[in-house]
Length: 301
Image (cartoon, rainbow, N blue to C red; front, side, top):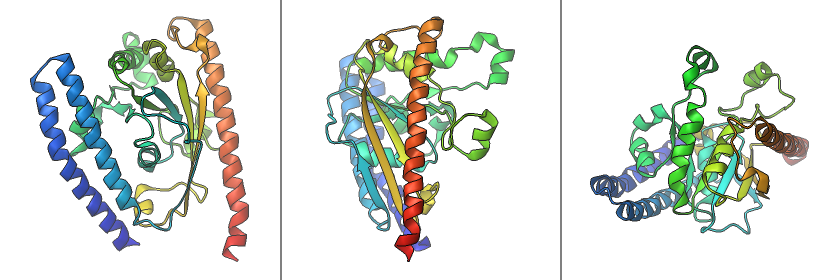
């Protein structure tokens, strides 16, 4: 397993370096000429390069032959629609799972990144060039000391999403805001077994800014029924099964336009809608995990 994982990691590194060369060149040209039509054209080329990078990664993932992929609900998706994805978050592996499942099925995936990740080797500049939204997150304690920063992250979301009105995109939002672990769940004292408390503000703001273009929400549930998997374990072929369940939802009309920060009634209704979705997601996760836990003794015997 170690040799397989090391080989897969090396191949991914080479694949990343290979595609970063043309991506950096186009990114420089995009930065050089501040004409909107030119920059939009450069963005489309950059997206094609990034899709090729994902294709390369997916071929490398086949080295992890011991992983069974079960993907449900992706049959009627289109590349010329706007999508908002709401997914649970357990591991860095989640991002590669989503890219594998959705690449060339829907518009290129963009997700919110912490501001510090712009310095990530190779990929930080690539994410910037591809218009990924970078967020500067403030802790609750910091916001209490600096109340003028309250809502700043939502304002950043508003500005970043405004540029996505001109061409179809898919925006991923990990509503929990961080990776799941039992300790965080217990600290939050939430009625879930496999999820943390969802934060609804980000997707509410994205929907409002998109001026009703983004009418479809993909409720994505990522399941590792054999236990939470790390990216390294996956590369080593030690992740027996990955399940991705996709539920395509039409966003209720009343949620397409609203002021999440200042309209208390809208905020309460939106939070209730998201909370119910999260309750169903937790039940689905529990169902999958229980099913495969019960099946595993028979499979091994």
